[in-house]
Length: 298
Image 1 (cartoon, helix red, strand yellow):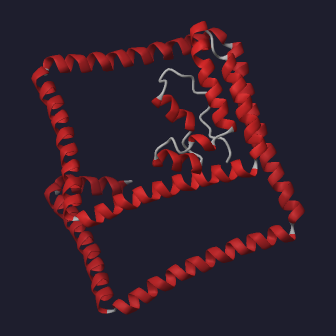
Image 2: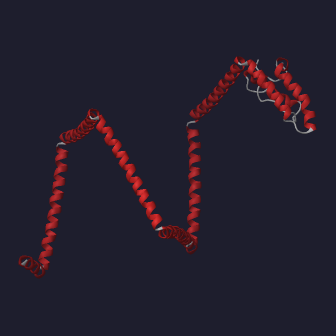
Image 3: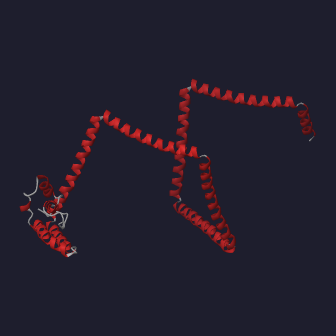
C-alpha cells in the first residue's frame, strides 16, 4: 500500500515526466508492431512461393480436419444408430417441451395479469400510432419549412428518371444501329420461331381431330345445339336461324365451301386453326351468331 501511494505521489510530482514516459511506451509498442508487420510483409515478398505453399497447406489441412470430423461423426452415428435416433428424438421433444412451457407461462401470466396485459397492449398500439403521426407530421413540417428544397428534390427525381429512361432508349437504339444485322437476324429468328410454334400447334390440333373424328363431330353437334339455347330475343332467333343452318352444314359438309375462301383462309382451315364461320360471318352477315370457334375434322 505504501509503495502504491509513493508511486502515485511521485507521478503527481513528476507529471510531465510520467506523461512523456507513457507516450514513449505507446510509441515503442506501435513501432514494434509496425516493424513486425513490415518484416512479415518483406519475408512474404522474398519467399512468395513458400508463403503461398504454406497458406495452401493450411487451407488443405483445415479441409482435411473438417472432413475427418464429419466422417467420424457419421461413423459414430452409424455404429450407434439407436442412441443417435434416441438423442435426436429427445432433442426434438425437449425443444417442443420448452416452447410449450414458454407459451403456457405467457398465457398464465396474461390471465393472472389481464388488466396489465391489456393496458400494455393498448399502450403499445397508442405508442406506435403516436410515432407514426410524429413521423408524418415531422415530414410535413420539414416539407413546409423547406418547400423550395422539397420541390427542387422532387423535380430532380423526376428529371433523373426521365434522363435514365432516355439514356436506356438511346442506348438500345444505338446498339440496334451499330449491330443492325444482328438485330435483324434476331427479329427474323423470333418471327420464324413464332411461326414454327404456331404451325406445330395447328398440326397437332389437326392430328387430334383426325384421330378423334367421331368425338370432334359429337362436340360440334353439341355446341351447335347449345348455341341455339343461348339465343334470347325473337329477332336474334330469327336472324340466327339461317346462319345456324349454314354453320351446321359447314361442319357436316365442309369441302364445298373451301374454294369460296381466299388462299390464307383455305390454308388455315386445312391446318385446323382458322374457323370457316368466321370468314362467312365477316363476308355475309356481321351480326350472325358464331356457333363455334373450332373447325370440323377433314
